[in-house]
Image 1: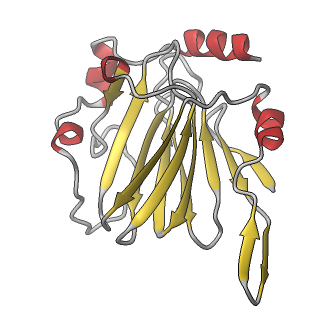
Image 2: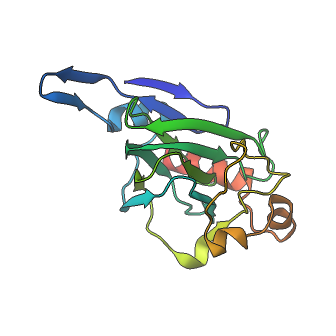
Length: 198
């Protein structure tokens, strides 16, 4: 398994080694020791999610209050998505920056997002399926969003696509509005929380 740190601090991409023969293929899509080596602590699992999306579905940008936040390990066993990792931690040296990783059923990559980052994805094919391993369960009162088509956020979205968004994501504040209202997590608080996990 190859591991690559992304531009946004704390986020990583994992590319598994695939073993194929006449029967099909086999791979290890999650290895706790590889993740722990990269991030410095084990990932406590509290919930596993699965989403299936039509082509052009744009979900996110979602994030949770820290502490405890919600770390995620995400992969795409069917179809293809553009996965967006957004630094929404106020005070971070990469605040507002976005990493984009194509997750698909060919390379079978996964991404890890630590607590405090924003997450979104765009489905490139019908029936695109994402699986998430999550460090905490869903808690509506601690979950927030940023409008993914906020021009100042500037997600690198493909042109000439009629995106399918939920009413909730479409009504979400812009990055500037979320910052002004105090919704965004703090870089210092996120670093302190992650350091306590190490």
